Image (tube, rainbow, N blue to C red; front, top):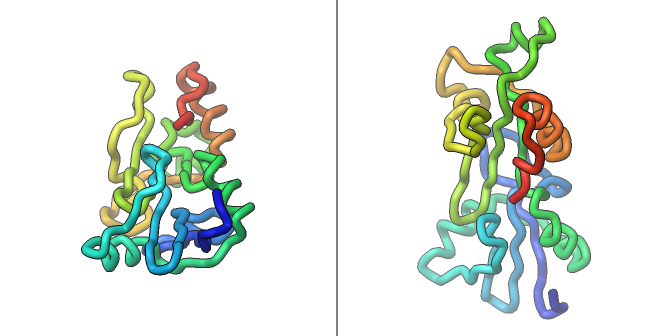
Length: 169
């Protein structure tokens, strides 16, 4: 990273209060009028073209300035902008101490948002609507989610399915 850029983290927009300056949704930088964002899918900086600026900067939500050092920390940590949850069948199961069924995660990059559920029997992450269903009230019969760190998610996946490193990006 060079000092020619001003760095920012995004914290939204979303109906859920998931993202903060400490746990951002995205990493941005600007040199003059040129905006770039860090793609959380291939971990490369992408220039924002003029025709995409309104759409992509809207997806950035509130932008908060950060130091080049903090930006470097976020860039080096592929888990910095990923959120994980243990998925329970419902809140009653969680309250009764039943084990979760799997882990879900959200990777929210400026160009695309991906909600995934770990499909333990098949050993891969696949698309899901669970996070939207729960946090945005899209159905009335939703599972219960409990937020986890990446380390806790990895440990839970090991406990449930005997895999390690499933959270690696």
